Image 1: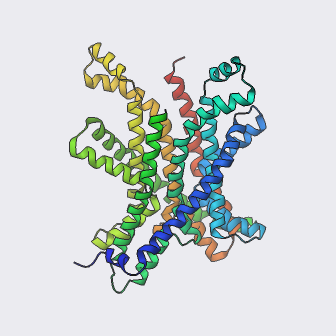
Image 2 (image 1 turned 45 degrees about the vertical axis):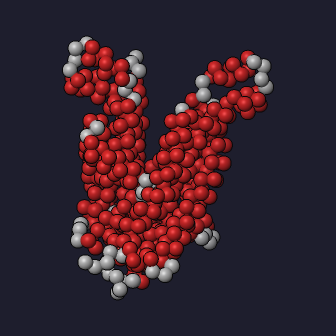
Image 3 (image 1 turned 180 degrees about the horizontal axis):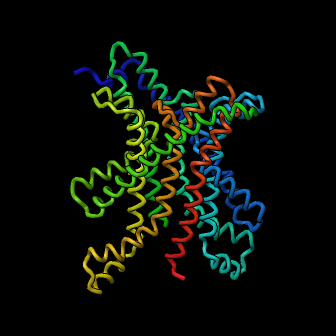
Length: 224
Length: 219
């Protein structure tokens, strides 16, 4: 039986290259998640306001994010806006913009959900104890909100990592692309390398996302 | 924007939409079947199958569809398993969707309090009767929003099919941009066609969700 390509990965720096490709995806997700959390918290707080115009704007924003595939958003930012506005955008910047746009909506909705899930009695009791409005938020509402949000935002990280596999489509060299390059480079010596390489990529994604999503489930159970 | 150009692209986009819809719905159907089978296995706690199901669900929930498709379409032929792009698309969508549906169905079943089953049985209902008339309706009602969210997610995910050379909406847009460089026109059409495909599902989802919530809480 011919080799299935695991040996190709052990040759030279191939495996390291694959890992550095994975790091590209992880790096973009971490940057985007950080931006999303910051903007998401602001957005979530604004969403609980009674302002009609704000509500309509956020409703449309959420619906766009809900309906448009991330790939379409990537294409719009990477090919569309550069054409319309005539600027230069690296694919990494485009990816961060798109994933932050998406993540902010998700995060905003989570924050809103967490905020309105705090029973009204918590606010009232805190005020009845004579706490200042600032202290009500700082010592009563925020700690509870954050506890509810942390598992959900961790969950967002895994979804982000999974979605960043799409950046390959706007020309970033991430793990799948590196995999393809390795396969092409070794086409003659091991024609079946595709099996080993793509199986390893599959497993690598699992090894990164699975522990994170377990952590999120565990925290959710513990803090619920 | 050049409207005449957009008009000339319309038939191409229409065909792509039909292809996307066909594969999308077949995939969603497969996903529902896989999810149902898996959740029954988990519910009945069938020994070995239970572990395998758990492994499948975790594996497919924690990897991107793009990577799964690459594995199915480029890796499997190397060990002699060959599939057409269309079949691969359906299968890939079915597999990832099945994993998500299993989770949704499971949390739906878990959301029904145990006392419901006990009460039904103490009224003299057989386990099957209790499951059919007491547990299932409540479980379905609480998992419908999740199922619809999964359907939208799956239909959105079809956009990665272009990587395994299926001529879906994404592929058509990419191809036309590459050939004629009418970037804006192509992207506008792309957005319009995704809206045509997904807006009705999304709206129907919200309406259904509201009605079910109504049913759940009575009055």
